[in-house]
Amino acid sequence: MSTSEFDKYKVDHLFLLIGENPLPNYVAAKLLLNQGGTPHLVHTTHTEKQAKRLQTILKTEPIGLKETQLVSLNEYESDAFEIRKAISSRLNINNGKIGLNYTGGTKAMAVHAYRAVFSKERPQTVFSYLDPRRLEMCIDRDNGDRIRIKVKPEMLEVKLAKLFQIHGLELDGNPTKKAQLPELAAGLATVFKDENQAKRWFDWYYNVFCQEARKKKNSNYGDWKSKSELAGLSISLETAPPAVITYLKRENLVTPDEKISLQVVQQKGIFPEIKHFCKYLDGLWLEHYVLQQVKNIADLYSIKDYGLNFEVPLKGTINGFEFDVAFTRGYQLFAISVSTTSKRDLCKVKLFEAYLRARQMGGDEARVALICCTDEPDTLKAEVAVLDDKKIAVFGRDDLMDLASRIAEWIKQNDKDAR
Image (cartoon, rainbow, N blue to C red):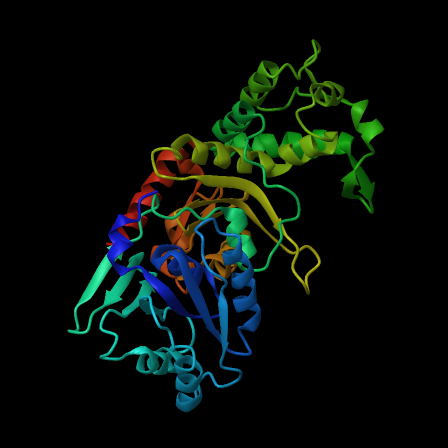
């Protein structure tokens, strides 16, 4: 990692205004503090938790920082006198360069913090903010000039687990980084590129597979049957799409009489439990297919961390929330919502939820995509015009067979928009 472009703007004491999303503060601290430097986190009563969380995180960063200092404004986030008094009281610094990054906090905090820190007696003071639209760190100079430094992916790698930690969220289990049965997933993708073949798949899956593997409750399908019951099933593939049968045979999951044996699935140990294979056929295969496509382009596009099944417990909800597939480039979050449905209402709900959660986690820099089986991805995207057009992408049925290239184009367009 090279941050040499930032060397001349690094400081020994960096004042950071803490907002509801502490990610920009974390980025600024990593890029603008000298080794052995001191972060000063300026927070209000409302953002005290974020400040203390960031204090704990910075303590563990391997960049040799001194103990992070907390500067409380209490409830005076708009009071000019109190803001200037609180910050001025911390400026009695005998040596070392001072910096102020005003990305977070309120506008009033930014204005009055600037007035507190600015002094002709400290001409080397560095004033900065992170531009989320252009992914640049902006350095403001006394003469009114602004220096923009692109925060390239290779300069600062923020792993997904760290991103969640910054927001005080703990993952429920470890995300999956290796696609399961990738060839079968690719085979199912070839089926779903054709609407008629996809219908044939659903007919077999619901009318044959689920009939055998699921419990019935009031004429509706309920939970999966017990582990022992599932292990004893061999389910006919007679009406399944030929392409699926071909790939199942490649995985040696088909018996001589053209049935899929769940006992064989169990013996192979591909999944921790048989019901996980059932869920895979229920639609999780598409998530694994998408994960494999991301993995295929990871090295070419500086994708260092990726995975699926990011389950996060959330207070006030039963199931929390989940990113189907996600990856980071530098500190920028790319979240992908995945569904085998073509129903527009369901697709829009998944896109809205992914957008809201991604913005919560990754701020204005976050990007969101929906991968589904609609035949009209452009019109679906147009119907959610309330979302920022440049921050979302929708991929449909026709994109499935060239999905890695489509995701790569999405990344390149993001870089182009940030210029």
